Structure formats: C-alpha cells, structure tokens
Image 1: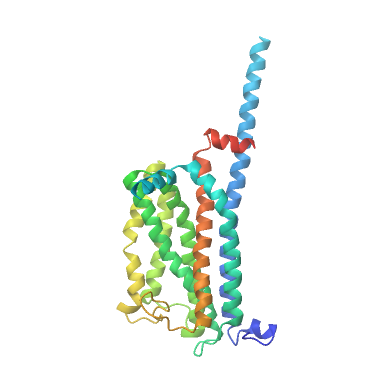
Image 2: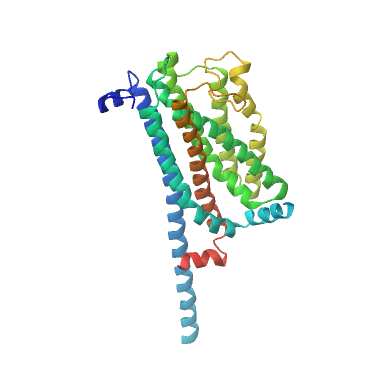
Length: 69
Length: 248
C-alpha cells in the first residue's frame, strides 16, 4: 500500500483537494445518471397504472349506466 | 453466419425482445460495474505508486481517461445508431441513439471537469484553449446539439432524423480529438495508451487503468439499457405485453 495512514491517504501528498474534488464531482454525475432513468421508470409505471384503472372504471361505469336505462 | 446476423438484426429490432433480454442482463451489468469499480479504485488509489513527476494528482487518470475514451466511443455509437435509423428506419436504433446522448454528454463533462482540476496542479491553470481541450469542449456542445434536436421537433420521426444527421456530421470531430495532441503543439500530454505500442506505464499503474476503462464501458451499457427500456415501455404502452406487465 502506498499510504501509511488514513490521514496520509486523504492528503494525497499536496494534491488531496484536486484528487477528491475530481472523484466527488464524478460520483455526483454518476449517481444522477443512475437515479434519473429509475425515477423515469417509476413515474411511467405509476401514470400508466392510474390510466388503466381510470379506463376500467369508465368502462364499468358505462355498462352500469346502460343496464339501468 | 449471414442468416444468424439477419436473425439477430430482426430480434434487435423487436422492442419486446430487447426488454426481455435486458431484464436478464441488468443484474450482471450492475454486479460487474460495482466489482470493477471497487477493484479498480482500490488498486488505483491505494496500491498504484505515485507518479515521479505529478505525485498523487495523477490518480485522477483513473476517471479522466476512461471518461474521455467513453465520451468519444459513445458519440461514435450514437452516430452508428443514427445511421441505422436513417437507412433502415429501425425505431429501436433511434431510441438507443436518444438514450446514448445524455449519458455520453455526462462522461464528456466528467472528462472536461476532471481534466480542468488535474490541470491546475500540473500546468498551473484550470483551462487553456489548446487543441485537445477545445475539441473536447466542442464534443460536449455537439452532444447538447444532438440532444436538443432529438427532442426539439414536433414530429418524433423528424427530430430523430435531425439528431442522427448532426451526430454523423459531428463524427468529423472524433479524429480531431484523437490526433490533436500530435498535430498541434498542445499542453495536453500525448496518449498514455496506444493499441499499437507496448505501454510505457508501470503495470501497477496500468492494470487499475485498464480495469477502470472496461468497467466504464460496462457501466455505460447499463445506463443506456436503462434509458432504452424506458423508451421501449413508453412507445409500446398500448401493446398487450406492456399492459400485461402493468397488470402484474
């Protein structure tokens, strides 16, 4: 291992700021890229299930209406 | 062989087949990404020796180089998908191209930002208008342009076509990025890895880099697949197989 202590690892010589800033920004962009499609999928499933329920309700509603008249 | 290729092409064109096969791939891609990233970063950050000139700031290479390579490959893949859509009108290809654009742009942004941060301790400046940096910035703007076109026009078909054409035109920039460090006298160092030559890097530095490059491509495949599956679901939402999926 290249570092003798955790503090030394964090310091990265004199370059800790640059190294960890790079890795931090990358981590943020990566996480956003994972979360966005997952959120999009969840929203799609929710909206479409609602739409299907609405359609079914309308259909049964029409049938009841037809039988009552 | 030819028949096999034709069959593969028809299957790839089938959204339902794509959705079903990728359901099985996703766990493997997630696993490979996590393991590859863990191994690559532990080796790169903890075990690779510090660079004799740049010290520990060189460890930025393990994200910078994979991201920059991927940003260029992704653009080429997007252009190929666009060409397939233009020539054979394959809708799946257009959805793949649209899924690649934001992911490729993200990696291009990572390459630019980590490059700027790496430039500060190495060159003493965040940014210079040299050929490599400028052509990479142009790549980012090309990504933005393609993304805008893919979503801009009322008719979906026309916006896919416009996006495909710009990505094909934008291909010109790819060899410029690659050879910029040779054609012009730039501040950016020449390529660390060359396919035709033996690597000059120490194996302890090189192995983590190779692991990170492969992992980045696997992770990219995962992100594009996740987005393409959403495109498939949205466009096929009235089909019975998606309705069955929603019922379950």
